[in-house]
Length: 217
Image (cartoon, rainbow, N blue to C red; front, side):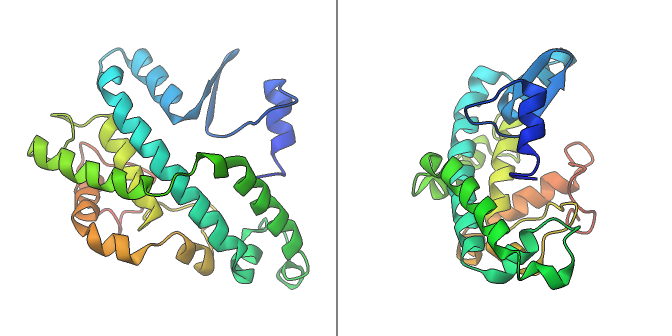
């Protein structure tokens, strides 16, 4: 929970200044920050190279991170411009009658997030990632960017969440917040990539548990 849980995270990290962000993986006294570090750790622990060669995967991860940064900024600013989305952003324990009164709390939290990540957003990064994914799949001649299912496929499938999300959250996103996550024009233009994601999500070999069964079919 942005803002509310940051103090607890800093306490656990013993980090009182500077930016902190999730995801993080705590393993004993070690902390792995970000999806890339977590994936590398998981691959090393598995010892079977299942996620692929990370030197080869790095350019795909960079594309994904840049695209997600642009997408994140767009979503945050969409929420800032929508009062209902702001109300939906408040914690579930806030009673409905108080949500309108407490919009300012949500607005402050969203503005904080926007300031925190805005410097990472580069216009065009999202489209570039989608185009590179399409090119990579065409070059590979299969549903895998690098010969077989690897972290590259995970990274680029995740990018599609900011144009046509299928992942569910707990609690679920409100209807106006869901709309902020959608980009119909790009979803239509890159419908072939949405179909690709659907094939990955429905395959027993690559299915991700975060996706609802009805969306993964």
